Length: 122
Picture 1 (cartoon, helix red, strand yellow):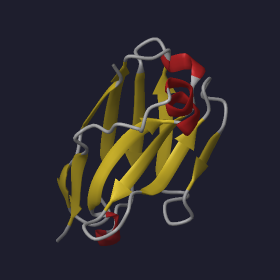
Picture 2 (cartoon, rainbow, N blue to C red; picture 1 turned 180 degrees about the vertical axis):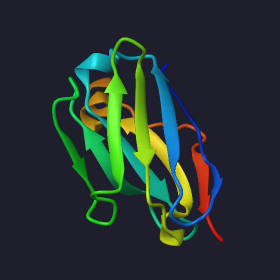
Picture 3 (tube, rainbow, N blue to C red; picture 1 turned 135 degrees about the vertical axis):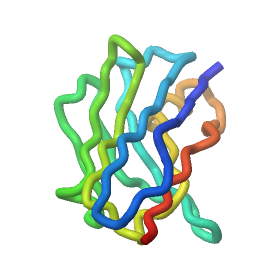
Picture 4 (cartoon, rainbow, N blue to C red; picture 1 turned 60 degrees about the horizontal axis):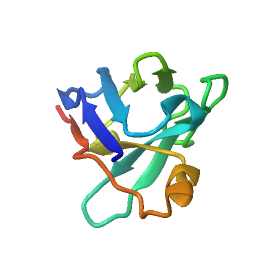
């Protein structure tokens, strides 16, 4: 089964940095784009960043462009989110997942890890 384990969150002051990690298993990691999402209570998950299967292209939500960098290591089945110049509005639980086509091929509803909490506060 697919497993996604996020880590690296914590409490940081505005302007600080964090590096989130996601360890994935249960699928052919290098075949799929990977994405980071955030979720705030009362809101649905929102896409933060995406990276293609080989790591050649990335895309970001407008709110994080220039501050966050997504990367991956296909030899380790890991995807990362480097978060710089953090703002209070970045406070959320962050989740990783594969692109939806993985779940479509599996004919399953997407499953999610536990996420990792990021709190930006002074």
